Image 1 (cartoon, rainbow, N blue to C red):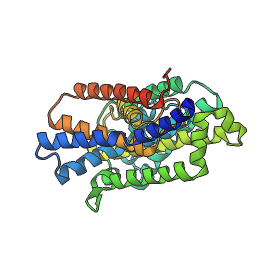
Image 2: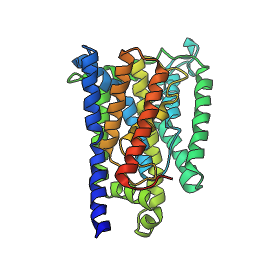
Image 3: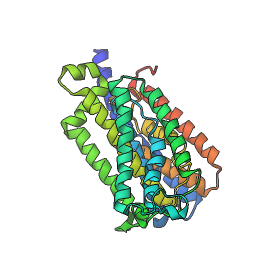
Image 4: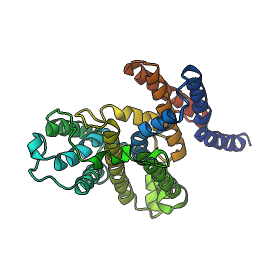
Length: 331
């Protein structure tokens, strides 16, 4: 009887964990409002959402991969290389950095950005799913390769001469919010609906929970897991495009070390590194919490390395919370 009563309690605690970040988010916002008069202004809150949009899309991609029990560390490099290739196709060679004398139209260059993200995900999926190589090592190697390609293709330079279309997602607004924020919101709504109500979403959880059992149940494990890598690559490419527009340029270091923040947001949002557990609502609250903390610390002129230290402390706190709520030892 004791075991039967303990299980429902753990389930309730795990569900409550999806909402666990809301009080923390409210406290951080309250502190921000007390220490900085401009923190709760509409302009600043919109700026927080705009700055978090790119991260939100990359976290969404990583979350989908994590739900299947895999990793993709290369998403941070995709954030840089995908828009860089699109930019080099759209910038005239006469500028000294573009590839063609007659550059591609903007829409075709942006399409190339998405294709690059899909190709990276396709290749990662082939190595991890088909060849059954270790996902951590494969995507770490891909991270390094893509980082080298980014520096080599841009010659280490910062790109400024891109068409206006490359900045549109971050600079154009609708009902007072950047298009990038609406895009991220729609992406989370669609993905959340699929995960909760569609058989593909249920299949992702089943694969992450027990791939062999999922295969025995008739789920096409390899096809779905491979597709998730492709979707994650495309989301990272769009995130890179948004990041380019938000910064107003594309540097050879774009996306560098972003993967730590991505994992931080996913983990503190309740996404299990073992696969099969977590919700997009939790991941989104993780993104918002880190976005607000970053804005607050930046406004207080705290050095960036201290912000990274705060992220590390937040991850450790989240892991301890997961240990308490799940009752399961972490190996």
